Image (cartoon, rainbow, N blue to C red; front, side, top):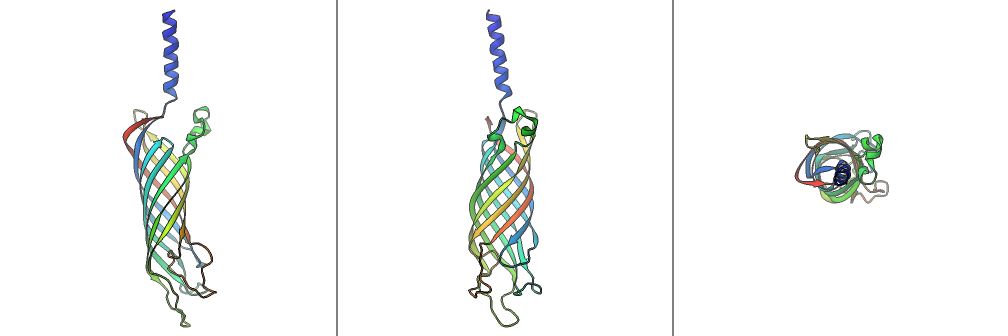
Length: 227
């Protein structure tokens, strides 16, 4: 009888272990992205962003972290824009954010498909963006002078969606993460393009925002967790 009882207990222990998910609490990464600024200037342009981040993993699928972005935003056209406006913004953004992946909410071990897409996530946060105009048009050919600031700081609200692809080490822990991310950043203020004109035909009507599509790699390290 004792022999059978030990076998049953052993089977239960094996089942419990198979459902565990090993992970490291910390991750740090870098990424490269293509950005687009959406301001009151009609022509949009593509530029590059460099991204760095540091995350604390509350679970394998929920994280809180810090992110820094550095890059160039631009828009308009000195010749073709209806009002002759153009800007180039060398920006730096700092944000705190949280992300939750699909694997937190579904039994991904019950389906090959769910297991494959368990890294899908959404997230948001808050931070600041520092704007610095390195090129713009302040005066039209007809003499009108556009008002605005060449340097400013605005609140930024990032909204993220993307997917993580985990690479495991020999012990079954996620050691590296390859990431694809789309981020929309809504800014509070008119500093993104440097224009804040009070004239009706030039007046900004909507919040400025910019998007970044990026690919990155993270390395996981630090204290170990068991989920």
